[in-house]
Length: 267
Image (cartoon, rainbow, N blue to C red):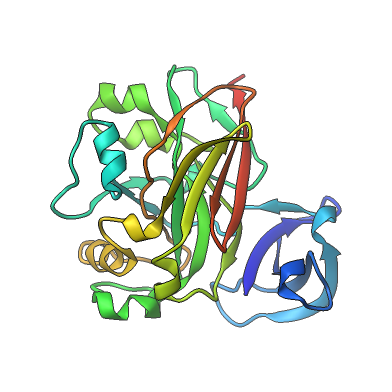
């Protein structure tokens, strides 16, 4: 199942179930509206349906408390910055105010001259959890989506910590929807790519993660409680690079879809 949030006819954001042509169903490339919040409890179909082309997708999840991100989780990405992989997962927080959805602009801050894209698989948490062993990680996962961990590379080096460099508003694009049907085995072997203005930049596979999804959940929940709607960014592969106002960056994860955002200068 693919769960989206969308805006139709200038109304408020609503949740819906996405059906693509590749699914072979009766309503290709459409969204069927559902009532309620699927992360909060039971939902039901409303009978309303829209074509995907007739709605605007927004972030499929609004993190209720936090985005937990993972650094240096691909050895080749660590190497491209003359670094080594950590002995245990390296994590940091991005504020929930950094989250935007598909098509929304990434704002190029006044304080940076080196803004980078980072293609990532994202995990959406479905229940309150603490100290989850790796072999039970699947029990707390609601689904997966695509993320771009936008980073001011110069501020990251200057500050010698990552809160400002990765925490600006608009620095966590998520979308286009949450896929709930993938198993952990499937997620462990997905192609991850990015393009800048249509030109390939990153190409890798989640099988190359230093710490796979179950280990990340085990480690993160060892020190913090995760809540429904919290998001984990699982790290980016090699090939990251700068983007400028006027550019368009797309991030894809096999089986999950493509997330595209323009870059604009701060007013």
